[in-house]
Length: 115
Image 1 (cartoon, one colour):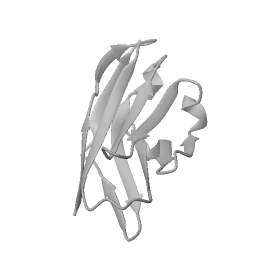
Image 2 (cartoon, rainbow, N blue to C red):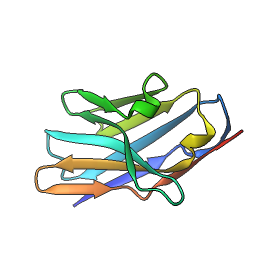
Image 3 (spheres, rainbow, N blue to C red):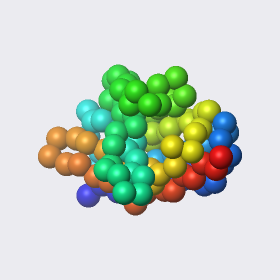
Image 4 (cartoon, rainbow, N blue to C red):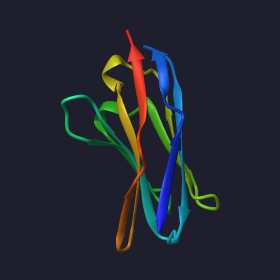
């Protein structure tokens, strides 16, 4: 069984920064992908950024140049550094892990960006 625990959400003014962290525990395969998704009120959940165990990254166009995803394979953690935040970044952010036979979601952490 795999569990994801997120931290780091909160309230920030537009232009500010936040860092989200996610720690995975349990039966983690060496080869996997971890990422962050978000869901704003009334909208579908969307990919924000993802990173593979070989550090290949993928970003949504809306966050390119502002957000940076990173991971520590030894600790099974993934982080999302969010800079130049905008009100439209307000959402619940979910950590995600995909590995063979399994996809797991965190409980979500709320990010609110005020204008």
